[in-house]
Amino acid sequence: MTQIIDRRINGKHKSAVNRQRFLRRFRQQIKKAVSDAIDSRSITEVDHGEKINIPSKDTHEPVFGHGPGGRRDAVHPGNKEFISGDHIARPLNGEGGGGSEASNQGEGEDEFAFQLSREEFLEFFFEDLELPDLVKTQLTKVTNFKSVRAGYSTTGVPSNIDIVRSLTGALARRIALRAPYSTELKEAQAELSTLQNKSEHTTRIEELEEKIHRLKNKIATIPFVDTFDLRYRNRIQKPTPTTQAVMFCLMDVSGSMDEIRKEMAKRFFILLYLFLTKTYENIQVVFIRHHTTAKEVNEEDFFYSRETGGTVVSSALELMLKIIKERFPTSDWNIYAAQASDGDNWDGDSPNCRALLNDNIMPLLQYFAYIEIMPHNHQSLWRHYEGVKVQNRNFDMQSIDSANEIYPVFRQLFSRKPA
Image 1 (cartoon, rainbow, N blue to C red):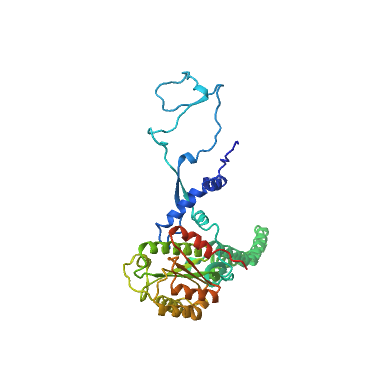
Image 2 (cartoon, helix red, strand yellow):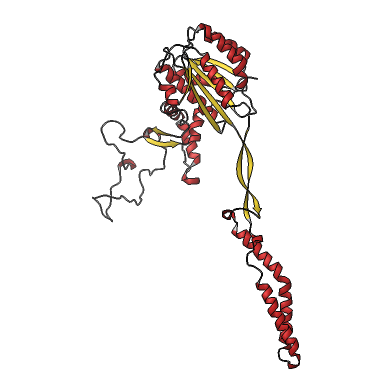
């Protein structure tokens, strides 16, 4: 089947139609590259574009070519064998040119590289996800103020003077104030010109000359620009509603959570962060790590600190509740939480976790996602969290066994639920 490629230039010299066709054609390679890119990025720096490499042999497009026979003129730059006017034998079967084969193995061609934009990157990453119905559809609004133009004012600072508007007003004022004097001046000058050569009207001529002089002085005293004429660009603070959210990342760092489990937890937290950035303009991330005690840390310590110990999960929940009350009032913030653990907890602490969630935390949250990186032999924490899930529609939980289950589990947690 013949394909004709549209090479007409779009904005900024990009063929938008062909770019979309190209993205559809190499969707699988691009999705794999996007998934691989997540591993090497931090949570807050993950929503950038990505450079994608695709083998050149996969990018070949059909082109028009000359068949055998016929005559045509051609230019072969850089040759050392022919000069203008020489005749060149036709290639057999109409074939000519050659590829860039630099070795006797492989294709001998570089891979084709292109840059995914941030929007394209996120589109591939979340193409089949959306906020579930159980999350509030009317998101809390936070009123910010933006400085906008609002006409002119008669007061202000010199840097805000609008010169054109001020001079326009000054010209209108001068025309208005000079109008009566100008009329009298023209009449006096006309009368003076008629009496100029008549000696019997000497007294009247002197009166007219004095009047003309007086009127010219009055016109000259009208200022070119008066303080009354000055106009300043006026700006007001206009309320602009925006949305903001905070995401709490809670992770168990007890001795049973090895580096592999921490890496899987990181990928899940990255997914959640990216997902929220598509909904909210302002996102803050709070990292809480715990063993027997909980502590708020930065991202580096959250994933890579060597500190370890036993397991008391309620310490992390209590610290999260304290931070919410001190820094993130629910009237201003949409609050999300994600907890990653291997499910190991002190048996006497699991009932405390359930009570904290049901009575204090879940009423404040938009959504709480718990992932247990231990699919078999669930312990007491999992069983008590099942009770939380029954009582709270904005709570969900899943288990993960290996890295290739992270994306399916995330999609399951954030897929649209039936009404």
